[in-house]
Length: 209
Picture 1 (cartoon, rainbow, N blue to C red):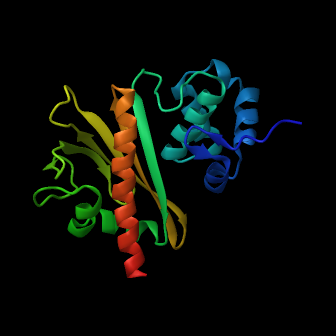
Picture 2: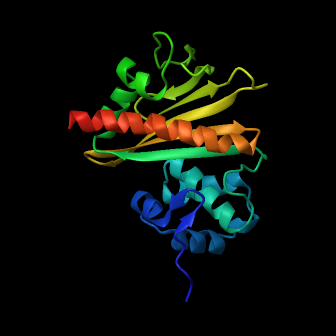
Picture 3: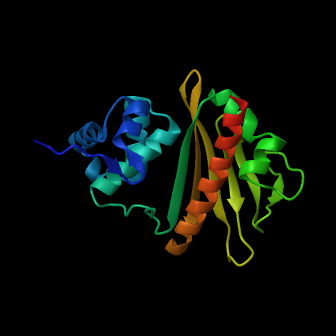
């Protein structure tokens, strides 16, 4: 009997099943039978998009989990050799309302904490209370935004992706993914930073309910 996989990377089998209708064991079986152990990351995501119609987020999530399972990827480290962290939290509100909150001036004061007035809009730059600075590079309103993030003593910028994933009519998930970290030792402090930021938004939402 095959042992049930409870978690791959940061994603539990419960989460992947809720989002895709399949457990980790089922996805591993599907991808193994398709011969994905010899594919590139892009070939796996293309397969998941074409045949199973997974969202962009879950194309990446299932692909990364599978690559961890076949020892092609180290948890927390990308195939390019840099590092990333992901923080997720479920919110008791619809995806549309959650996006409106996090993109509002009040919401951004909780998770981004810009020093001055700032709009979540492509091309807009920010500086945070903690001394980080960056710019909004791409955005799909209501779904996701991609920002650069650089601290004063870093030689190059990193990437922060903010996603809103719908769950049910009155439930959604906020995801913050910090990528392109050149030093694995940054993962702990940055995870704590983003967990605190997401937690602040959740506490605010709870006061609204």
